[in-house]
Length: 539
Image (cartoon, rainbow, N blue to C red):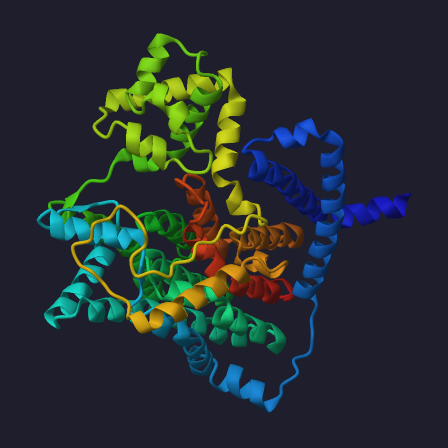
């Protein structure tokens, strides 16, 4: 009995994580089928069996994964692998990745613009250059001037194709940079081969490398930013060049996605307090400045472009309260006073919210009933009522939050999003028309169908699901707690990404919101594998 207790104590972290995964599986299944947790409580025996089975399976997987992560192995060094991964650890992986993505680049010519691209492009040409501040400023003008170059050449497709190449190359370079770090960490060749094939042949990456979304550049910069952070952890003496690179990447994060500031701010502050302020040298002030200046420049850029941009609505940041009030209206419509309803109506229409409520996306209620000109007093009254109603029916709020974002951490929904058309079917009336050659259309359709079929293959389909990568993030956090290393710096950007996604309008069909985690989690897994196997302390 004592030996059993001892074994449980040594595996308590694994047991806790397996418990968390099993709960997610149990409730995720219910929300996927019924958009509520009713399936869990109405079929208690079935739920118990699913929980027990899931717990056992996940515990075994966690233990196996932990063994892979922490087992020290001698590095076997065949000449060909040494040539690829040691002598040319950046250039050969880059060439392999680009070659594997070439079919997408050719077949999808001139590229696949996403909805956001059409949104700000139309605003620019249809409204005398006025743009919504909803999109990252520098990225918007980058896209616009690429298209302007194409128009100067009398072919808008040329501008779009060059923009597509830029996206693909930035993404490919960021992935190839990983292998320089895997070499430093002495990661096994088998894992390096797996990671190279993962980035090169997994359709998700080749497809999105040829899709115009700011998430592509942003997530690539997040990956490079995290790789720089691993160096800060491992090295005791950091050069100015290292902090200059960190500062440049910080600025790029802030300028390629609006919530980049929420990644950079806590991370760079952590760097300053943990790795710089404890040093007494005056020269460290310059390094501190290199961490802070990008944040200042971001806010300055917002002011510089303020006359050009129409400020985005506060409603963009209110997904959680809007969804919870909408679900409250749907299921507890009459349990509200006239004064409370008036307070809610200051921001969204309470009566219409119950009809427009979509459990997985906030856009319907926000776009069609939201008061975009609400005063500060109306917003404050809304929040007061929102808090008050929570204590009346907390289940409505909790279920609304879970229902909107459960696909983020429930890895069995296959919630990916594939772009293949030059112009997606939408309500956008584009000022500029981009055309895909008719000769490529049949090939493009076959490639698109192949991607969709691939997402239906058992086991393989889950590689496309964002939940798997969130679970790997949870696994790494579990290892840190178990080994008591407390080295959090490289994980901060991904944890902040996870937190930001909680308030996203939807995760359903928007895997791109989680690209920073999907792009970076495998190299981080390797980094912590290397780190946790070392006996020496790290800076």
